[in-house]
Length: 510
Ligand code: FAD
Ligand code: SF4
Image (cartoon, rainbow, N blue to C red; front, side, top):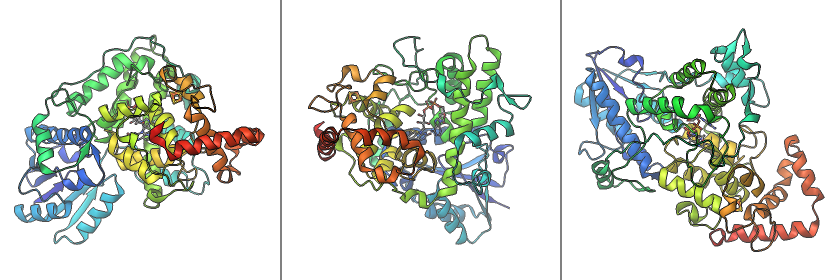
């Protein structure tokens, strides 16, 4: 039976059983669609990376004998919409069956179910064979529990998949080395030269522009440096194991004006597009670690495994448990607009200038920049989570809704009221100064709370606690912060609140 099989742009898993052997009856369909470039405004590097990765995937598999129909964004026959694309291709090739891999986005899941319901041929959906968990596994694991806890999910995953376990106990005797993952980077140890690529992407950019897709952000036409083929991604993984893993855990939370990537792997695009599987990443990292235990401490490795086996799978499980309602949650009732400087990086606040500036030039910021600088500021200034989400979904190379929204709306903005995080991730300048060197080059003084030179984060922090105190009155994890708030001198608090009001009303002046 001639079968049409759809492959979406984030389903680039060459190890999928569909491709185990060449099936003469199967035709694979891929298209670069305006539907996907336009559902939110995207960074140009993100669109470029996905299209390059899709083309490379198709070339690799065509080279092995699989048959593809691939429509570039500029192709005249590209309807730019999924429904028309499937109908048109089914008719063109006279397929008698339609198959697709389960999408990871709710939006596409709904759309594909609706399309299939109206097709004149039998249809089937198969797993992507990418994640460790099934969509519903987290919901099953926490069934009947009031609070979801990442740590218990993570321990279950370690045991179930026998990862870093010795005789049923965690290797090294501890499950979690989070406490040792908090060093500030002060120039040492040296950071190996980044594994970048210098791809020429001028002609693809011209195709994207001619097709009319609206994007933002910076791109170097002849120095595109993200890994987009399977070979590139494997070499970045190898570079991480050889050069970066040894210090990954120590400096996981560090920030520095001259080092954008520090010891981070930059593997999120490779995994989220499914070019690499989380299992092969973890297996490779552990293989390297166990061969070099005399040089690499377990805390460096456990920190990395926890992000992928723990957080990444956890966020996906929460997404499928909570969608579609999750996308509309705004439990803290925040309604301010996103400041203009999120689109330019033009602000006197040095931490934001660097973290946002880097996001716009590189489509990348690491976790703590996303959480404790940009997200912290958005939450303290009470920005509408819809606008925060749209920005994060557009700007980062690795942003796909299942992992973006749970991190942004959940972990960072606490708009879910505590499903992902048990308390909001907010801080004054103190934390930013502790973890990086932004404050030393800033127009503001991180130790000062009020006055023109005072760091805006300080006034915003106390104002936020005061403004949202009703929301936190029953939250045990906020009790200490609330106690400090209640003990604050009334006149000082009033002064902080007035300054915070000024910052929130005039964000682009600060
Ligand atoms: P590394 O620091 O090298 O970590 C290794 C891998 O662990 C990452 O590649 C990623 O796959 C995984 N990982 C680490 N933290 C998380 C996490 N919290 N959730 C899920 N996976 C994690 N990650 C995305 O992949 N897409 C997003 O859209 C995204 N949006 C985020 C938004 C906010 C507000 C925050 C706080 C975090 C977000 N993250 C997102 C998580 C994390 O910041 C990125 O995965 C990481 O910065 C990617 O860089 P890296 O590959 O160098 O990561
Ligand atoms: Fe950011 Fe405040 Fe430090 Fe400036 S002083 S870098 S605004 S935390």
